[in-house]
Length: 557
View (cartoon, one colour):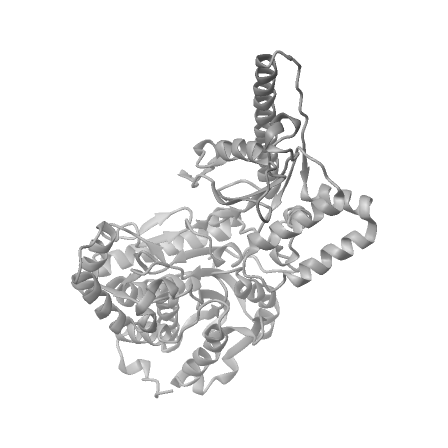
């Protein structure tokens, strides 16, 4: 590795830019060997700076998960007292596959930016492409997989940490943490959360707040992207596994098609704004279906027995128990509507044949917990052992929906369940809704200091900083400083088929208020992903430093 320039000889802006581009050139797609190697490279980079050369005991890596192990990197800049602000960012990225022939350049910001300009300049562009070309040609934006989401945020955190460390007598402490796996299951942040009580004890720290450094998007002039987020949306992935009653296609009314029930569930949920939450003056996104499919293999002239559906439902206030109850009511009503419609169609059909009859279909709704209990009563421990073996076989899958679907289908067979019926539960990891308001006076104090810092940054840089209530995308913020409710954990564990997607938080976790302050750009995760450089390299590190030092100087923050 080339020698690391002394941060004292560089402006904060240049230091942040260099760090961000250097780290982007280290590929770290989630689940790849590059992700596993990144923590060691970052540790070496920090260890080579003057501050940590003389304080190696203030650098630490801790294992997170995987083979080879993914690790969290922790870097502590000490000052007076025990109070500590934690700066947190993830270093894994989504795949580079959508760059196509430009994939070899995906992690080289300067060369990729030039290549994208050449590609877009050489052909007709649609609206999205024309916007990307204008941004890249302006010199205000820089491309690169992970530069926006979110290595520039980590870089700004490092720059703020180094500036704090250079002070003669800083008040408090700043702990920077860089974690893997945010793009998958937040295993990096969750493992860090679990280890943090012991780390705080070891380093004698009182953690009073955190700043998450994740990126945001803005398709306008940046006024929406330059933002403080006081909370983050909650994410649920409720599933409906529909069990029909198969019949030959020529005798439709002898059975019930799983698709008929599934279509009513879809109609009731998909983009239904009545299901949105409102909290703190903001409305959550409408739920959408992420996957709906017929669960069978091969062709046959029989109505489908099983249809699988999984939804993405973002919330601002619902608890797991409330959402599962709401979902059950929706599914139950949808099934009743579907079965009543089929009865009416059948009665008209037989009347038309001159053979009138009354048709009635009855269905049932079971939670996954109830299905598990039924399978145990039908098949005993042998049935549960077969399910456990299947779960072990699927443990390396990167597709949570496929894994959950397979386990539920197997358990339906073990239970001998006949339709019409619908199994409901959660198909992937729950991301809790978090908001600074839930931390009472500690939250209000942190918010007051962050807003005060924002006002100073607005004046100093002649810019604007927005305050928003909820970070709109799922993020590590759901687990950063958050101690989950015991009842929520128990309900989720009972109704999430795959144990790997249950957040089994230990006792004794720390709880402290957290905000999100990060870079902004456009089209993240897409081929045209690009970072607004002036804000990320100049304003953001100054803002993070100002916010952290104000919180540390305020004895009530």
